[in-house]
Image 1 (tube, rainbow, N blue to C red):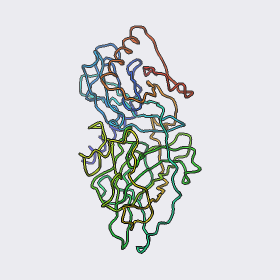
Image 2: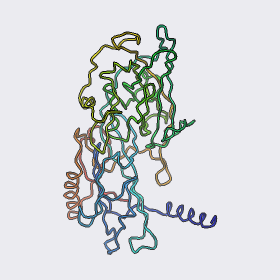
Image 3: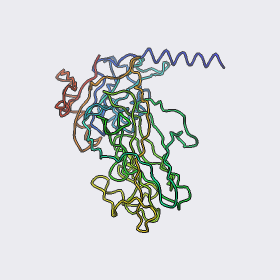
Amino acid sequence: MGKWMLLFLWLSWNSYFAAQNAPPRTVFYQCNATFISVAVRRDPQDNRIMLDPKSLTLGRCPVSSTTALLGFLVFEYRLYDCGFSRMFFGNAVKFFTELVYSPDAAANVFPQPFREQISCISSIHLNPSPLETTVEVKVSGAGQLNFSYQVMTADFSRPLDVKEFLLGSPIFLSISVLTGNHLPLRLFVDECIVASTEDLNTSKQRYTLIDNHGCFVDGKVASSRFLEPLLLDTVRMTFQALKFVDSNEQIYLHCKLMVWDPKAVNGLKACSYLSDINGWQLLGDPQSDLCRCCDSTCNLPFRRRRDVADKTGSGILHTLVLGPFNIHSPAVNGSPNLSNDSHALETTSAFPVPPAVGAFFLELAVLLLLFLGVTVYGRVTSPKDLEKSLLVPHEN
């Protein structure tokens, strides 16, 4: 058994490093900040030896259609469906993953494995709000409230004593408040901002995860969300590891927390954007319409106060700094991925392109490229480049 396992590992290792780039004029794609459409020629070398659709993946996504575009294998997905990694630089974000072809050697299909990096660059809207300096919070007659956080396993069965993560991997967090002898209190994450420094005032780079009084806005471009079960003194959440390109590998989370009387929490919420319903959902109450303001402006129907004992249902505000988290870029073909280049369709459209519409433009552009023999390359060199929309063939 040991010999067979070693043989399997050797073959897998050899296959990984034997994989080359895809043949020229094989891979075409377009994307924006939400969706991606990829077309891969079924007959890469025009010799009637076809790719095996079951052996082709985009990140963690399989081929979505073999018939949408004649002669091509098509992927049409939201970026967060396929587990794209994200890297930030300036007012832009780079999404990237790998297109991998790993054929079965015994099958009568195109035999050469290949790996291609797929990347998209889009502008982002950064709207961080100024946060209060972290303060020691004391409640009259009840002692001190203690705030803490832990990095957890995916099932939250135990804490993890690690703060090293691969770019794009999920980070599971548990944020808690210890109320001591005070009556039960409810904890909310009102805002949460990623920064490159522990002091938010000195950070030149910021990115908003949670905003608008409890809306997990990062869920629109990643698999980030609040997690069940709904607890009074604890918030569970997950987000994809991210980093800023022109800074070190460390990031900090600056989270504004609200502690409130659980009987008077009108307006406070934990809203996640779920890709399967393409909309917002309140943690603990999927039928609630409390999250409908997340795409506009959410207002609290009361004034924040620091006296949690006040009978009007007011609470306290506290800022907790989480980190540092060390985020490492994955290696691509043996070297770290630190490039700011993009060979994709870049757009700053505020409205996501539905997959069906993306396929229409993809088919039209591919046919033009194939019949006219036009090769277009996109390289981001200035903010104006982000306004361009180019379909780009991936070539060696």
